[in-house]
Amino acid sequence: MFRGNHPTRVDEKGRLKLPADFKREVDEQYGAQFYITSLDGKRAKVYPLKAWESIEASLQKMSPMDPVRKKFLDVTNYYGQMAEMDGQGRLLLPQLIRDSATVKANTNVNVLGTQDHLEVVNADLFRAEIMGTGSAIELSDSDLAAFAEKTTPKSL
Image 1 (cartoon, rainbow, N blue to C red):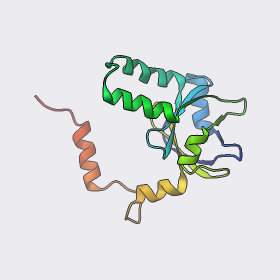
Image 2 (cartoon, rainbow, N blue to C red):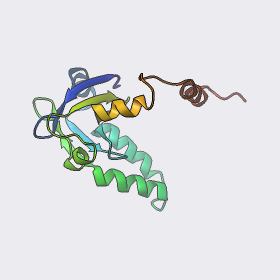
Image 3 (cartoon, rainbow, N blue to C red):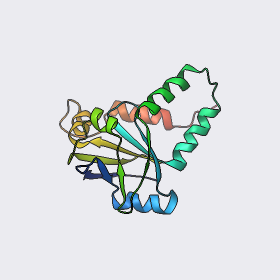
């Protein structure tokens, strides 16, 4: 399971060197094959192929005519590309995602563990987004209440 934030840089060729903690997890659990995509053009979603295949299996259960399925596939295929981790633990981020997410050569990025995949986001843009109008990176009371509502078991 991927957890935490590991700030790093994307190199001049658009490659992301996986942070050591994440690389160790990849080596132990997944292997070198990845599917890299985005849902919004702001964040690269780096799925070990095994995790992406689980999503594809869920999509297979949906009707091929389902508009939600179609939109999801349109967006993830538009941004998506297969990638293979090289011997030094680097992945080439797709050019389209690098352009749309403002991840240029030597850009500082945050590599966020999100359970079954990693997200790569421009560090400056991410900080501005998560801080909003406040001066700290935090969850508001309303954020916590919404989280509690969605995670608390419903009683009969």
